[in-house]
Length: 312
Image 1 (cartoon, rainbow, N blue to C red):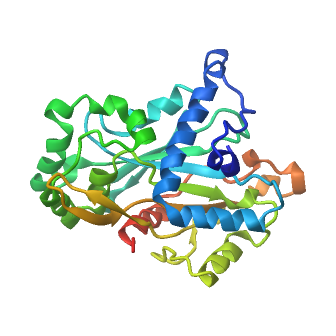
Image 2: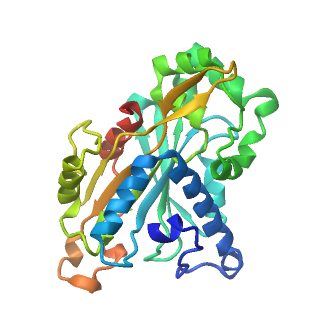
């Protein structure tokens, strides 16, 4: 899916392979993604400004593609990765690699879109290993995911599309308790299934030829706040996956007692996937997405997670 299609609310292209059953309802998937993105644009002014910049640098009418979309969840029954992944797997996405982040107490799965060179984005979903937190933090999370709320995870897709929190508005004291132990846990409490970030596919840009390093320089020059945890550019050990991101915008959140605070929201990431060694002989239009480095890298993603902690 191209960003330009998502931003103007159209259904976007759907030139990708689906089973006959899934193909019949594919517009539902695109409508869902578009609705999730509408809320993301509303809450992430930095992303809107930046997309306008990229479109001004691109050839007229050239689409801008997403590499992936990312969601955060709590790893408790009914609220973990499966709660939001099913809306994608039902429409032909396939589960791929599992990644672990011991220091942050996270695990993640990513899902590949249907079709070898699909215009749809990958999906990256992480979950907090709640049972590894302190008893105090576990009690807070169980308060919002247990009891009467236990079945609310079934409506993860609806929450992602509307911004509704499956557990309602949180108490300030609970947010503070989680913040002291896990920024991820606190973020999820007040953002729920809202999109955590989008990622622009830098190697698919047609007009801007500076690569991700040139893009980073351009963004710094224009005053965008960038995530510099571990360095501005995050590079996989094999050199094939190169990533960077802005820091998260802040959004206003009204807690259960009526107190309003500025809390971390979403951000935008950039990914450049280099051509795999066995396909380096291919040139220009002959290079397609499946010829490039696929998947994700723990070291890169670990630092990208910091984008919400660095919110300003």
